[in-house]
Amino acid sequence: MSLENWTWIPNKSFGLIKFNTPIEIYTNNIGVFLSDDNATIGWKTYKVPDENISIYVEDGIVVAVATYEKLYFKGINLIGISQTKLIEILEVEPDEVGTGVLYEDGDVQTPLDFDPLGLQVWISDCVVVSASLSDDL
Image 1 (cartoon, rainbow, N blue to C red):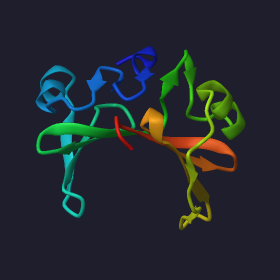
Image 2: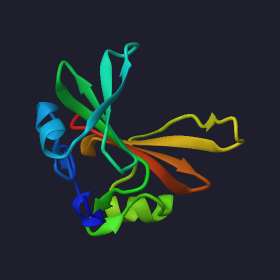
Image 3: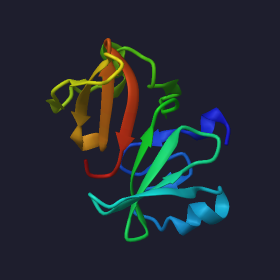
Image 4: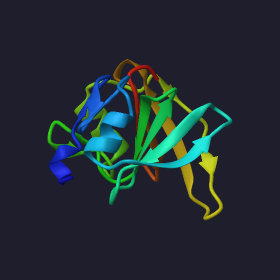
């Protein structure tokens, strides 16, 4: 799938992946595959071939997507931009700024929630490093 196909429509879709649709659509059409079960939350994790994208599924239905390299909105890849630029593009302040998480490599990442958009981004050194998308974060 080409870069421009990973466009996000808040609360609706990410590229070809639409929230609240059966995962079998994507296993058949774009070859997503089961990666592992996340039994602690009752979700299964599927991966998109050749992309750093995870699809989270509950009872066979897409509930969320996580992306680590590509998230196009208004023609701009939000992964890799500054927190300030993100807020400017989204035209809304975060509803919540979470507590920073210290990772083994010394990196500290902080979540920002934009609930009306179904968006949670993780920020490291004031830069967006990943995002989780859904229709009801």
